[in-house]
Length: 142
Image 1 (cartoon, rainbow, N blue to C red):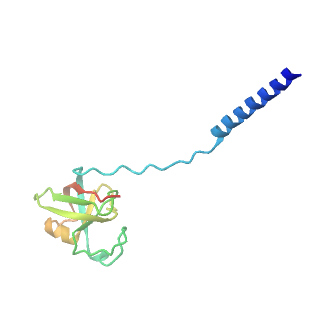
Image 2: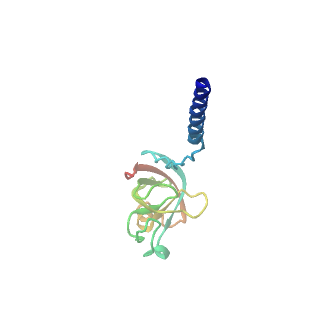
Image 3: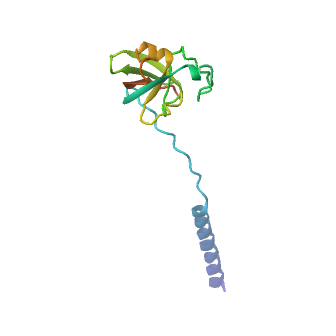
């Protein structure tokens, strides 16, 4: 009778081990969203740029700030708010440093919308858009 009792105990131990193993496999795994990659300082982007002014002056930007067309700010589709970039007008080689505080441009193909003040410094007010390159100077800490 002893050998029969031992095999029942062995079966119980094996059954418990299998249930524990299966329970571990069946547990749902939480998915942690991976953050988007941080833009690297010195990253360069080239393409058409534009500016925005009076119709948006005094309105809230995507960052929550009030847009002031007289400040050196800009809208970019993906750079984190607070990122500082150097924008260069390729028609005249004038450059200005701006801070990203809004999302845009909302015209396909454009890489950045600068404020009225930045467009003045870039001598780009007479045209709706201008060829430019932008270089990331600094990205705010997360």
